[in-house]
Structures are given as C-alpha cells and as structure tokens.
Length: 209
Image (cartoon, rainbow, N blue to C red; front, side, top):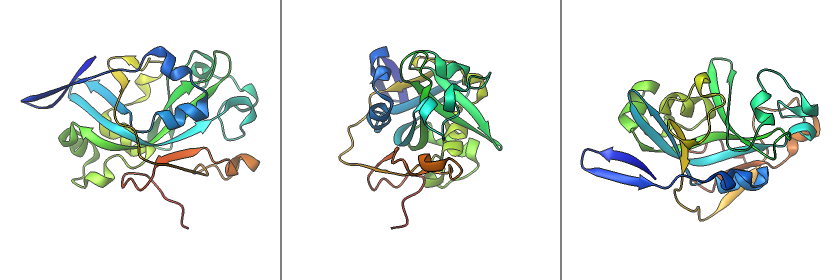
C-alpha cells in the first residue's frame, strides 16, 4: 500500500501491483496497464496519473523495437532482465518511459504514451509550464516531464518508491490501432499494438478515420 495525498485532508491508500502482474504476455500487459495509476515520488512532491494509452514492443521479431534481432547495447540492457523494471530512453529532447515485459532474456517492453492527471496537478503545471490540464500528459514526452520521470529512473523497479504502478480503474472499453512514429520499421509499422481507453480525452492521438 502506498499513501497518496490528494490534498491536505485526503489520503488515498493505493495498492501497488505485485511482481506477477508484470509477467503477463506483453500485448496483454499493455492492455492491463490501462486504467492503472503511474506514480512518481520526488523531493518536490508526488505526482501521478491514470495510464490511458500504451504501445507494446515485442523484442527480437519486432522491427520497431530497440531490441530487434536481440540487439543488446548499454541502452537496451535492462530489457533483457526480468519484467517490471523501468526502461527510459531519450528521444530528441524528451525522456520516454517503458515497462520491461516478457521473460528474462526476451527483451520486450511496453511504452507508456499518455496519462490522465490525478495527483499533484499543480506540480505538473509548474513542470510543464502550462495551465491547460489536457496538455499536461497527453504524450510520452509530456507525461515524463509532468510527473518527474527522467533518465535516472532507468533500471528502477515499479514495485516500490519512488517509481510505482498501482491499481486504478477498469476501462469500460479499449481500442487498438497502429503504433505511432515508427514508419521506417517495415511491416511492423502496421501491427495493431497501440492500445488506449476509448474516447479518453488525454489520449495522444486518435486515428483520422
């Protein structure tokens, strides 16, 4: 249990997921994460949001994955470890956060693409320099800055502070489609391994049709 302070008078006890939760098949995990609460504890305070969009990357056979063909580098090393560890990487000026999935030695991961803000919203506004709540966490680079995830979180576990995933709510409906930003990945660009909570306003992008 993790105490989450929503204001001075309200404390919510959040149940953190056990190790077995992360041992689901990656595509299943990407869907099970929807509605869960992603939490980051920092010296500035605690910020959190409900996961509303994810993408699965299925390792050696997935041309869009960093670990395609078992590519093992300093950056991808944590992907070869047990499920439930944090894989952060830099893209342009942004830090993106992934949850290592799959079995040990099988480098798979789930990217967190968007959150619905829950706790620490004033802190998120300060970090993101915007008052528009919809824009705080509706993208993979936005959400990490908003809740305080950075490259120092690489290799952490999600099982205990300061970086955690807790139980949230069960989505009424889940949609799926092609992943985003992977046009140069052969047939993998068409795999329908992006998942989102249907009609949630914090999803980063909806299909044009």
